[in-house]
Length: 215
Image (cartoon, rainbow, N blue to C red; front, side):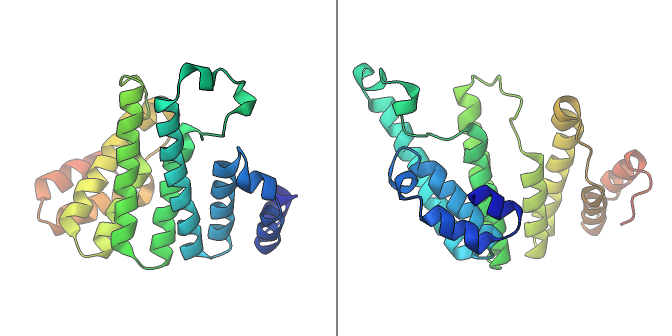
């Protein structure tokens, strides 16, 4: 019923239904409960409340990681169903995506940038865990997003750096592994900031690679 309410756009009803799930709120699904509550609050336009819930989820991620590292073998012989939900890797990244978007909606640009950096920290930790064998090493969209934030703050040079890194990631890893094209607006922003900074040689090089861009 909660997901049905979300799909139909009844976010207030979804929140009320989820709040009634006291067993999920207090049991092994507490982390999932916080993630769902945070997402519903975001969809409902309650951005500050959403970030409070997501921050609790981040703390829960860290607490569960600590327990798994310090627990004895006998404590973990229990069936997987008996374990607390520890979250998926993608959820550890997505929670900061939503927090960044929440801060943007609250016009708190510095805090939104902090969340973009936290994504990079999470990705570094995950790649260390997988001995650098993970193909998801850098997030192109979060680089693009941080570039937009920097530009909104008037930091054109920082914006250009992130736009360029986002473009490089889209054209290398994302093209090879996901078949994801470079967003057209990113191409325009890359050329525009390079030109604004007087990097004419760089702008001309990118312009040759990106025919049809309007900047």
